[in-house]
Length: 221
Picture 1 (cartoon, rainbow, N blue to C red):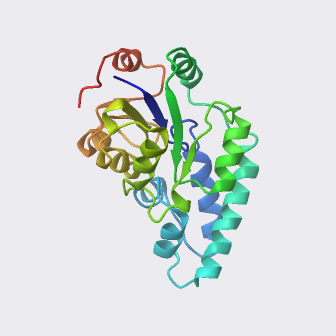
Picture 2 (tube, rainbow, N blue to C red):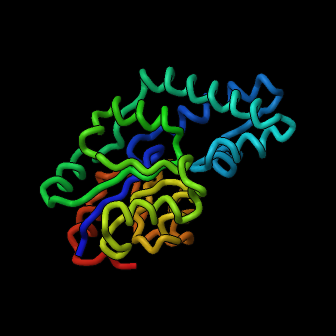
């Protein structure tokens, strides 16, 4: 029986990847590093900032890397304040979720400031009382720990939940936690996401197949 819905934030609740890409591109140009979309999708999408900076700017100290991360996220929030909108169909799914009295959580690798900013901007603070932040745990996505923590705090088992994710990192995390996972193809193609274990891949929350899956007694795996 379905008891809970778990949502990633970036690229799932809102299509933020174009904003993140442009912001990273501008910040890294200051260090002589040029990135394109394929490189971004392969090396940035869904990952924690410390790992990204360590890979792309390995010569920086930990403090210098943190400064780069902080500047990038501040620039992201400034740019996103004019551009942030919910993923199409999201609000209808959240209304359905409320009608079914399902438990819910946001499970994200986003920095705490970004998560707070996005939740407030989209009016989701009261809808999601539980937000699990990968950066506050010993391991973030793609490790299953963030989703395992969400399940534990909600008091449900993996088979009673559905996760929504967009990145390979996030899909791996949810699937490794044993949670049936619907992938949103906002940042990666279905051909990339199905092999990772996604049960269903949709363009956004308006896909009619989504409600059909949600209304099934158990999401097929």
